[in-house]
Structure formats: structure tokens, C-alpha cells
Length: 144
Image 1 (cartoon, rainbow, N blue to C red):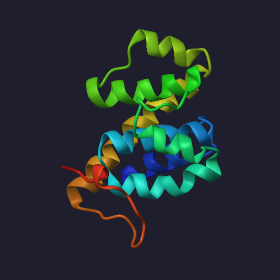
Image 2 (image 1 turned 90 degrees about the horizontal axis):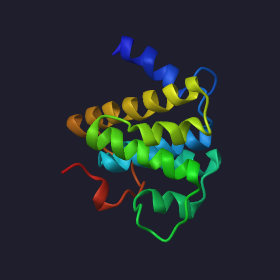
Image 3 (image 1 turned 120 degrees about the horizontal axis):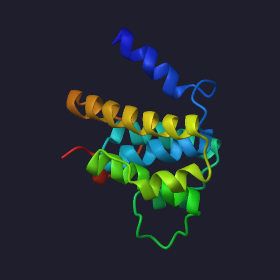
Image 4 (image 1 turned 90 degrees about the vertical axis):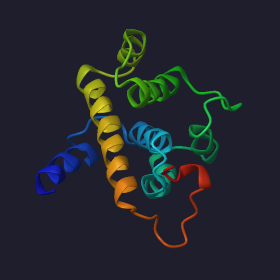
């Protein structure tokens, strides 16, 4: 775990990981939801508002078919997460869209962030890590 923590510190840093905090939390929440990680969702749910996500956006992260209208940038971030978790690959179309708003390093950091939190979700789900006491999660976010 010591080696993994070096990587985790890179991904979690607001200095070395150049993805803006709001977008990073959007990615983490979407991946946590797709992986049904109640622990990761509940932990990052508390960081989302200070990072700049609205309550409506946080709820809409769970439902891409909601009435919420995402910006093109945010929609591309959600699509990137969906593609990585479902297909383990980002399509050329999504890469191009991300490249319109993020530089090359930021695009790489986005992939690192989504991939890292997919892995962490696997850890927490498999080890049975529970959300903090008194933190509501929602039944749809517990691993099956």
C-alpha cells in the first residue's frame, strides 16, 4: 500500500494533478457511482460542493438521462467515465472533445483520476469498507 499511496497522492493533489478541482470531483463521483462504491461516493460527495458542483449537478451525476443540461465539457467528462468503466477505452470522439477544453497533461490526468478511483472503488467494495457513520448514501450505491 505504500507504493499505491504515492500514486494516490499524485492523483489527489491539486498541484501535481492539473485537472481543476470541480472537474476532478465530477469524475470521481461519476466513477464511484458507476462502480457502486458507497464509500467513495459518500467521501467525495462532501467535497463536491466546496469544489464547485451544485446540488442539482451532484444528483444528475447518478442519472445521465436526467433533465439536467450539462455543458459540452461536463458531458464529455461523464462520457469519458462511462467509456472507461464500461469499455476500458476512451473513444476518439471523446478524446477530441476533451482536448477542446483540456491540455494534453490534463487529459492524461483525467484518465489517471478515473482509473485510480475505479481501482479504489474495487478495493473498498471488495474489502467491505463502509461509509462514515451517519452519512447517507442511497441503496443504488452499494456494490451488488
